[in-house]
Length: 301
Image (cartoon, rainbow, N blue to C red; front, side, top):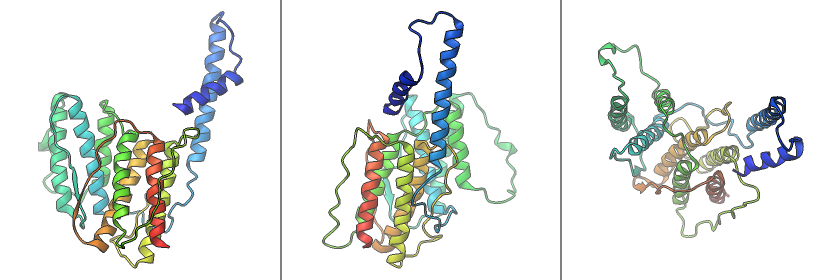
């Protein structure tokens, strides 16, 4: 909102707006100027968006089963939120395990996703002919990509996209797992950064902070001789305009790796996912990620 306000203020200084629109040519001139400024700003944001300090070039870029599991959780929540909007009572996963996730764990999630998807398709009078599915499959599907297709479908039928409050819930889980890595009696006394209302963060800032934390996690793993399947993973830098949805996917990969690291050094166990926040901004999400990154750095040095 502040960003839009800043653009509006700048336009007031840069565009000579007539006191009253006398004819169509005045209105056309004004709309052309507005379009020009908005397009210019978006292009600048795209250019800056590809610059990510601290990106882990040495990390793996291949998705593992643990990453698909957390991507499936995203899709399951997306379907649940849509059904709740339409008055359906559905369950969501509240507990996660410190364990090595396998295909059986994904199957359980996929079964739930399939059932919820069937409800949505039926409500929209969309029928699926399952008889056309070949019995002999050509090969294993990329389950991570399948989750992407389902999410894109949900967006196409009007389901709300990921919001900062959704990302904050995941980032709070990241922070929780990072704090659980401290096994000593004296843990780091790291404080959260104050909220700076004068310079609010945008999704690109959160995205950069997430990538810095991924780089820090790789340093932590190397410093402690920890091995996880495939190694610490950094998704390829997005070429799209950075949105909360892209940030959330990156944080899902990060959380999956953190849980695997925590399992390696602390064994099994469970933890409850943080509750949802009614109001959150990218600034709140960045603040939580920044805290987790600085806390992890204290555990390394």
